[in-house]
Image 1 (tube, rainbow, N blue to C red):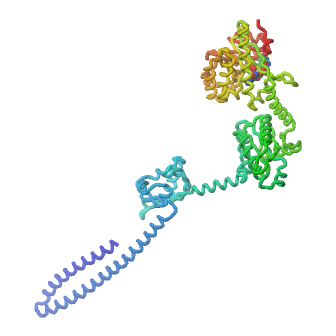
Image 2 (cartoon, rainbow, N blue to C red):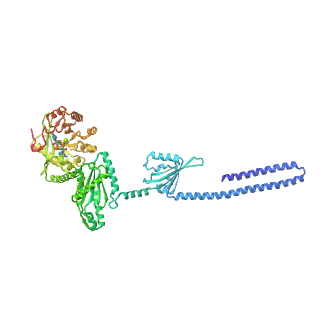
Image 3 (tube, protein in one colour):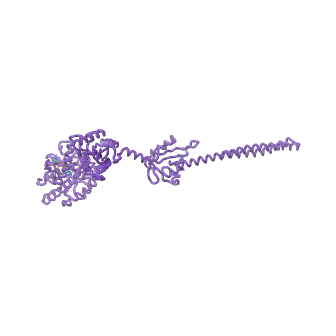
Length: 631
Ligand code: C2E
Ligand code: MG
Ligand code: MG
């Protein structure tokens, strides 16, 4: 437009200059040519007409061009304005957020949708950089890749997580274009984006629907299969055992038939809720279809554990279900398959559990069966033992035996270790190795250990009253109990009730219990130590202790595991290990006691190595308190 105005002005100026030149030149030329005034006047008149004619022609042309230009220009401006208005309307009413930044990355324009999505007003963002909206979900490499693509292709599209003004992080689908002018110079970036959090939510809901049972909201077969595969892979890497239990409600069909599907559904829901409450962490419960459920236990190393889990499930479903107008009783049959002993793949594990379930149903309902026949009998015996053990505690069938501990130098008995036994009415005297692991799994261990500690403390008080001098009585504390904060209160209570001088009580914890969770162990040991008792680490050498950690523990004694004593003094490895343990204990100012001394030469060797004390069949087996020999 400005070009045309300049054009018109240039034409007018040219017209003026030409007119003046015409007048001056024509006047001179005519006066030189004609001396006769009459002739001159005639020619001047002709000249004037010619000039007027030319001027009129020139004016006409320039006016025509100007008018033409003004008309066209006006029409052009109207179209442009229209187009711009339309663009602005689209820009503002679009549901996509639009952000324009200049080539330095400073925001120069945002639209209404931008403000709605981000929660920011225009004046809060103009002149700022888009990095203001970063969510922190992407690393620098992600943004670098966006700019690299923009530089190379002029455009980038993808999913990006940003942060709204209220701090909420949300996903958006974004397209960024680089804008160049006619000369190819980068001038702006335009980002157009839509908030896809709703889509994501729907996607999640869909995924949930695909992977869950709509009635109980439990994982369905598809998800369960997936979980089994993942769990087996992890278990393989960590050398862990897993158990897969297939559950089938007994006679569920008759409930459906007699009371209707609605009641059947309610029962299934109630069963799933009760099972969820029963199962602990590290377990996945799924509904595979109909009245079939499955449980995956991620950390189940032993048959006994799986059997106890199955028995727990059977027992918990025995309680009646109170539904709307009905009181329903149900029972369940369970098939168990173990990884890695029964199967190595997810498919095989499921198949084996299925045949075990078939076996369980065949054995009469409301029971469990393991994939391997002989294991079933073994596991059943163990679970029976758990029930019996509870009874044994109530019927006072447990006994405390005492094994003497001797000073290696003087040979004198200086203490005793309390070791539990079970006086079974039919099986006779059962050693702790056969029932302590069951007690640990069923949670009975706390009662057993506290009972043993109480007996041992009472016995010690009695010996002292009888003038039988002993430096200490040692009791074993299970790693299960050691992990519990309540241990400190239990010990304090026993000391208080029996009145034993805390310095006379020695608590033994195994090295593996300490290393299971060293931080908890450290706190636990400090609290116990505050009570004034002695602390010993049992079975030392078997638990892969970290020496650094060991140094921090408030422990007064290390007990060398009997496995290393057995080879003394001939086995070179055992000799070397025992020497190192003794040197280590000495350097940390701890006392050292050897277990399992069966021969005189073992005792001699240990004394030479400066071991302080020892216990073993050479000095005396564990016996009831009355049979202890006092010399
Ligand atoms: P431990 O604490 O290391 O106890 C030493 C074990 O070695 C005892 O076995 C003892 O009878 C045995 N023993 C002692 N001298 C000799 C020997 O010269 N040769 C051989 N071969 N063995 C010897 P026991 O009584 O069968 O106890 C086994 C384990 O059961 C104990 O090992 C301890 O870890 C656990 N235990 C025993 N009583 C309790 C208890 O009241 N609570 C807890 N939580 N665990 C207990
Ligand atoms: Mg011990
Ligand atoms: Mg030991």
